Length: 116
Image 1 (cartoon, rainbow, N blue to C red):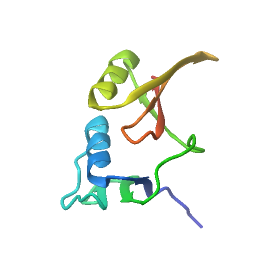
Image 2 (cartoon, rainbow, N blue to C red):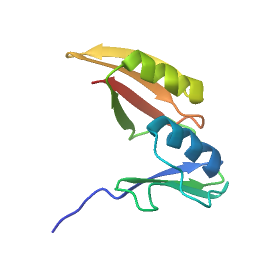
Image 3 (cartoon, rainbow, N blue to C red):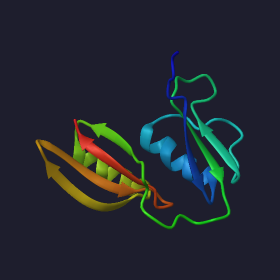
Image 4 (tube, rainbow, N blue to C red):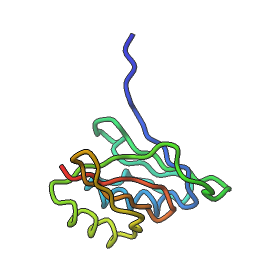
């Protein structure tokens, strides 16, 4: 039996707006038909994992129990790029030979960018 990662779904207040942030950050095109209620990245012929964004009525209240780790050869440039798109820098870390920054997307979902 094979199980594979297919889609990562974000609950959010404005699916179109948040999907545009992630589309620009990851340089992956936003699928046609994005609305405030639903948007997706990569489902129109891409390769999994796909990203979907679904509007929910409640706001985010606590720290994520799961988050995305992204890698970049130039950590400082990647963090600057994310911040220009609307991310907030939460913390910088160095441990066991790794360096990374923790950020939050425009709706407060935490993610890390790790130096490659």
